[in-house]
Amino acid sequence: MPHVPEGVETPCFMPVGTQGSVKAMSQTELYDELGFRIILGNTYHLALRPGHELIASMGGLHRYIAWDGAMLTDSGGYQVFSLNDLNKITEDGVTFKSHLDGSMHHFSPERSLEVQHGLGADIIMAFDQCPPYPCARDLTAEATDRTHRWARRCAVYHRDSGDPERQSLFGICQGGVYEDLRIQSAQQIASLDFPGFAVGGVSVGEPTDLMRAAVEWSVPHLPTDRPRYLMGVGTPLDIVESVARGIDMFDCVLPTRLGRNGSIYTSIGRVNIKGSRFAQDGGPVDPNCTCAVCRRYSAAYLRHLYKCNEILGCRLATYHNLAFYANLMREIRQSIEDGCFPSVREKVVAMHTGQSQAEEM
Image 1 (cartoon, rainbow, N blue to C red):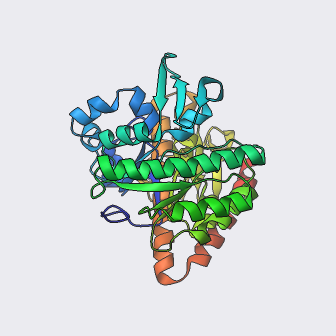
Image 2 (tube, rainbow, N blue to C red):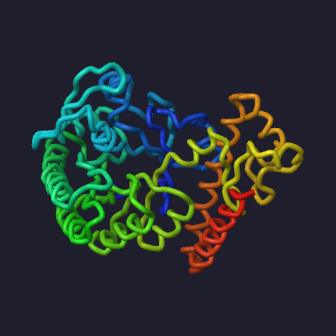
């Protein structure tokens, strides 16, 4: 199987469809209107509800949610380890309580792969242990070593029980905020010859400079002919800075989560549509945007929808934010082809500066 599914161009951004749905969006809007060719689903949530057996019986996740593009499922590791007071970690895996009903479940590397095989995503992820931030060096080293051992178990299980020609298994590097652990992890995971690699354990509360350092420490030790995926990142500024450091794939809940809360990305930075300055603004929320929302609706109307708690407001803002991300990724890809990526990077940095100014207004 190709390292990246057919039709997916990199660098790419994957909207997050945690439970088989990118919140507030339809599949037609995502694929046909905005041009996204890959989205993300979450193994933990889908295993608990509705269950991978049911999804498999209905032809897999693509058919179940009527998605025509490619899909990536994460391993569930991040969600399991975020349940700090609800899990128990052993060498075999993690036993945890469901956040839904308190029922007990167990995820091992093999179980995570079994679920992901049933879901049938094009790209599936090795089960890893994601240390929190902050985390002591010895505990981070222990989690990182366990991630390496679990990656080997995932590789064997996928080879023997999965369909490597149909599903690409990516390995995940860990190492926290420690340079030597990051380098060691990247080297060890790279030695397993996965068709793609992820930098995990970032965007867990660490400062931005440490997140970027983790990328800088990891990427040089990953193969240049395989996609490199930065998990859970990020803002437009995070994306251009990470592309500059060699990252190819991104996912993040920000454009949808912020949209549902009235925070909208524009060409001059992020704005809060609930602000009084939009009450009589008859123009689009972003005059430089040509998405369906900006072509049709005024900023004043969007503000009105939020003030009335109308669902349409969440939908329109989410649509616009995802259109913003789709356009950003297209611009990044074109600029790389044209040899002018630094100018796009400078523009996004300037936009970030504008965001800070806009948020003060």
